[in-house]
Image (cartoon, rainbow, N blue to C red; front, side):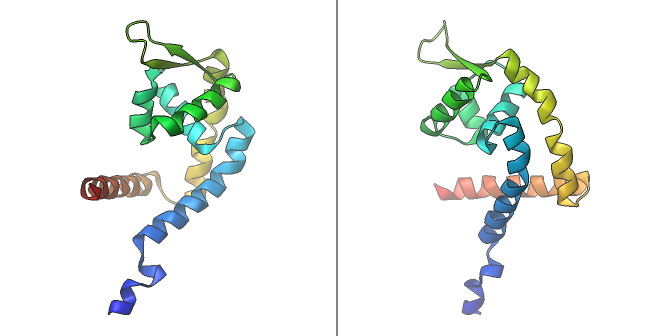
Length: 146
């Protein structure tokens, strides 16, 4: 029984870890065509949902620290997809706004989700259920990690 606890095939963490690697391999060529890394893609998705967010707001949504997010945002700005602007109301806050090129990229990126859906060989309903379960797992782990 104790030996079963230390079998790799029984680790939920390894199933998630290896699934993440497979997902990254799937995304890489599609995102390379958009000139984005996966974390940059996530930032762009949050901005396509709501432009003009603060760095802190984006970090909260993506579970990223400012120290991780700032270099990523600088690269997106250098690529011409976003502008970083100091807030007039609070100089400590930096707002992130899409450029015209960043907004135009959304149309090209619209091809990515259908390709991912097809590659999963799952129905949309199955993926929604799986996403819900993984989100609940993440929230439970976050509560208990403290």
